[in-house]
Picture 1 (cartoon, one colour):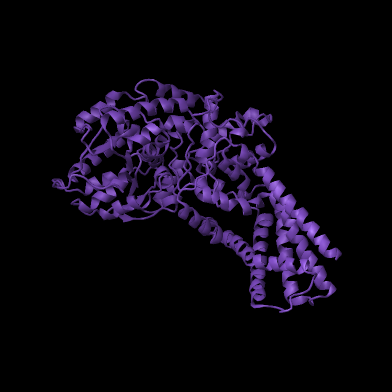
Picture 2 (cartoon, helix red, strand yellow):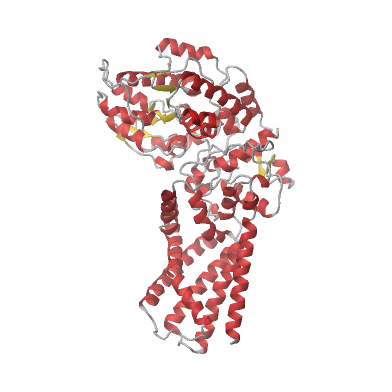
Length: 638
C-alpha cells in the first residue's frame, strides 16, 4: 500500500534526521577532555529528575502562572505517549480504525488535549503578545512553529475523537495532518531550544546539589590553563549549552543584571552555544574583540558576576553557569594575561605580597586581636580549629564575631584554638581567576594543617568553608588529611541546646549568605540558632536557597568599581531595602562580608539604628554575664 510506504519512509527520514542532528550537536562531548558527569547519589539524582521534570516543581516555583501552563503542556505529552503509539500503529497496519471504538483512555486523552491547548495558547500569548523582557527581543520562529504544531496535534486528536467518521476521507486527511505535525516536531526540535525536552532531564540528573564549583585543572595536561577555547568545554558544559530553554529565569534572578549591569547569564550560555555550533575558537576576550567577532563573551561581563549562584538556583534545566563556565573563563583569561581590569591586577599584586591577603592588612592587626582577646592557640590535641579568615582577622566587626564565638565555645566547653598566624585561603584569587596564586597559598596552608594536626575546622566565613570543603578537596594532599569542615552556624545549632541562654525580644530578619545557603546548602541551622535565643524571625522576600546577594561575592568586595553608578543602584542597597521592609530591628548575618555591605547600605539609607549582627553575636548576647561552663568537652558537628 502506497500510504504505508510513504509513512515508513517519512518516519525513517524524520527519525534519522533527528538522531543525526542531535548526535552532531552533542559530538563535542566525545572530544571533551573533562568528563565531569557524576553518578554519585543516584537515588537523589533520580528523585530530582522526577520532581523537576515530571512534577515540574522548579518551573512552577519560579513563575507560577507560566509554570502551570508549561506543566499542562508537559503533562499532556506524557498522557499522549500511548495515543501516539496507537496512531502510528493504525497507519502501519493498513489504516484500519480500532475496532473497539472510543475507550476510556481516549476520553482521558481528550481532556488533556483541551488542557494542552489552553496551556499552549497561554504560553503563546505570553511569548508573542506580552513578550516579557527575559525572553528576549527577537521573535522566535521555531517557537511559533512548535506552538502551531502542538495546537495541530491537539485539534486533530479532538477531531478524530468526536468530529470525523472513522474510515472516512475526512478521517484519513485528519490522520495525515496529525502525522505531519508529529514528524514535523522531529525536524524542528533538534534545531531549536526545544531540544531541552530531550537534554534537560539529563542535565538536571548531572547537576550538583549546590552552586557549581570550579573544576580541578588536569594533572596530565600541562596545557590546561582554564577555559580558553571551545575545545575546553567539558561534557557537562556541552550538555548545558544545548539544553538551554532560553526562558531567562537565570537573568531575572541575577543581581548584577537587576541593577543594570551588562552581565546576562542567559546570553553567556547562548553565546557558548552559538560559538560551539559555529566552530568558534577563542571564547572570551575584551569587549572590542567580541565586537570584532574575535571572541564570543566579553571580559567585562564575566567580571560583573557575584558568583552567588542565583542563576543556577533558578534554572529549570540544570545549567551550571558559575563555577563550570564563568569562573573557568575568568581563569582562562588570567592565565593568558588577557585581563584589562586594573583593580583585578591590584588585588593580585596585594595578595602576592606578604602578608598575602586581599585586604593588604598587616599581620600585626591579627596579632593584636589574638593578644587582646587571649585567643587559645591550636595544638595537636585540640579538637576544633577556629579558622578566622581575612574578614574576621582584619575587619573590626569580624573581630567582634570572633570574640562572640570565643565566649560561646568556652561556655560550651569545646576544645578549640586558632592558628598563631594565618594567610588567606586563596578564595578571592581563585574566584577572580588566578589559579597559580591560589595553588601557592593552598599548598602552604595544607602543609600548615598537616603540621598542626588539624582534624576539625569551623569558620564564620562561608566563603572559606566552601573553599576548604570543596575547592581544597580537589587536592589529594588535603583529602588525605580527612579534615571535617563546618560553618559556625552548623556547630552553633548543635551547641545552643546545652547553653544557658536568656531569650531575646529582638525582631530579626536573617540574611542568608549566598555561599552558605546555595554554596553549602545550609538554611535551617541559622534559623534553629535564632529560634533557640527566642528571636522573632521575619523573613525577607528572598530567603533560604532563594536569597539575594549582598554584593561582595566573586571578589567584588575588592575589584568592584564604586565610581560606576548603574541605573538600578547597588546590589547591597536593594538587599537592605528588602530587609527594612520586614520591619525587623536586627539583620542577622552569617558571613563577615555581608555586614560590611549591609552597614554601608544602612548608612546610605540613614538607617543606622538597624542593627546588623552575626548569628554568633546574638547567641553571645543571650548568654548571662556569668554563664557557667558546660561540662561536656566537645559537641558533634552537623
